[in-house]
Image (cartoon, rainbow, N blue to C red; front, side, top):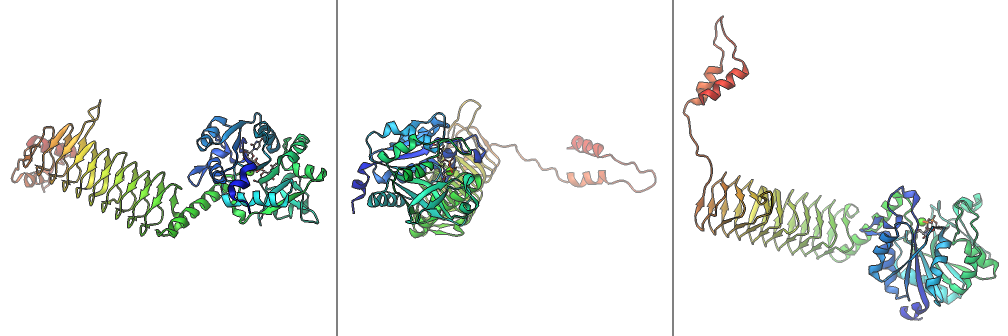
Length: 489
Ligand code: UD1
Ligand code: CA
């Protein structure tokens, strides 16, 4: 058996990705829709990369620029099909770019679940059997919408009949065309030239090349895909959701095999680049997105959404946290209901609690902000306690200013720190203070109105407001009572 690289030395790959995707009813071209955290066309190109084919050509048309942008980072080359006259026309357009290549694998840009091994198997089968074309097929209980494979007595393929042209008997056929093919190009080209737009869409169908090849005495064979799932197309929103579900389950399975516990994996939404260490537990309904990295022995509770996060080992994220572009260090506990915005850095064993928002701020080891705070552009020293309702007033209407709080500091509840401002190590800030000047190390900062007590005031007010008993009583209106209270207070 030839190695993969020698097998593909004579193969180029053509991905058909110029179509609009009318059935999605979308302003976005079909292959730019996302499933499993990537665009459809990116999945297809990625599956091709390990094959080491001579070249990957992507036929683009609808939103050509955006589609090109998705594939060129992987070394693929775009070919423009304008207008889009069907799958057969798309391949004709690619012809000039294929030069002297002997063989081509042709793939639709909207069937993203195909695996590299399946593509390799298709190419191998094609070369071993010496056919002019090999069609990857699948056997399914729901063939509606797909082209049907019409086999001859010798099991070779006589034709592919599109749904709209199929007779009632042909509609009963369960073997469908995946739109993935291997072609021997010198046999294919004359057939493409012979295609006629005599069909429901007035397009040139690549599928008609199969009957053409037969007419020319060429053999077309079928290779059945190992799983029908792999050839699912995304023609409708429902199919898109199903393909997304399958990608997410694949990812969960990989992670579980690597030692991650995922409860109700069908509710986990984990992007392909996410990495998670062993013995980490992911509860139901968690989203882990982008380049998120999670260490070992972490616990991510239900309802949390992490995007491009970096978590060390032993981190706990309690329920319903939203966090992006930030890091959490070993042993820290965040949540429930915490929000980390870009540039938050939560130190080892630090704690961030409910309704605390942290942006571009570092909490050093063991620091705590447990309730109802906004910490922006702040440095918070080790072991410091941020009281409930503390706000760093980092924005002066023009620019952002820094708050620097030392180690072992105690910030009382409901403190406003008007930045730029510094609080020295081991200092206290009294609850309810609005701090506009630096607080020295080991000192107390207190900045609030002084309290005055008025003994008996409340009792007197109640007496005034109670109507006198007797016939001639005067009602005190609500407004009157308030006015009285204000005058006396
Ligand atoms: C096609 C096949 C059908 C097969 C199904 C499998 C044809 C005529 N039919 O139908 O037998 O069962 O795929 O999913 O080929 N494209 C272009 N240029 C065009 C038209 C399409 O690049 O002018 C691209 C599309 O972007 C898409 C791919 O070709 O990625 C397939 O086109 P689509 O319209 O989805 O074909 P189906 O109707 O699904
Ligand atoms: Ca399709």
